[in-house]
Length: 182
Image (cartoon, rainbow, N blue to C red):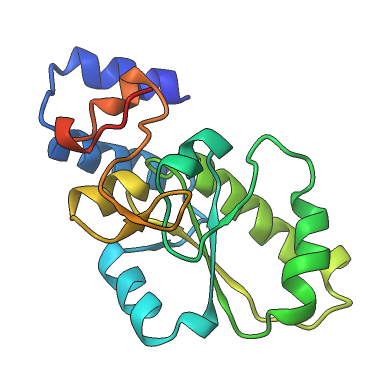
């Protein structure tokens, strides 16, 4: 699916990162119509005004997370089968009335996780715990966040402006000065 999107953008001869990002956002929203997105501006406001109501999940690899992530983010391995276990043990018992924000590089992996979380939360398995978690995907992922020069931190929790682009193909969505070496 992602390969198809990258091939289509190559065929269109689009080289402007902002134009590619706009297409990526539309593609993710079309691919995951049941996943609600939150804009970077709204997310930043929530992070500043009501951080206690947020759970921010980074759905990228450890290598990506160590380069940069949102302050306070929890790393969730997108390849793991432990999402349901994480929800039951970590989120559900103590997360009444919270917003869960999932993000990745551009939003595809995080939308997959958000969709899985929504399916689990509406299933019988989660009905024993009364919770009102609201799950969102961060629109445009860390690429959009970084391109807007918003705060990110590295593995030592120090401010950084670089993003691990996941692959050379996805690096095209980032301005060169924001691309970490991979």
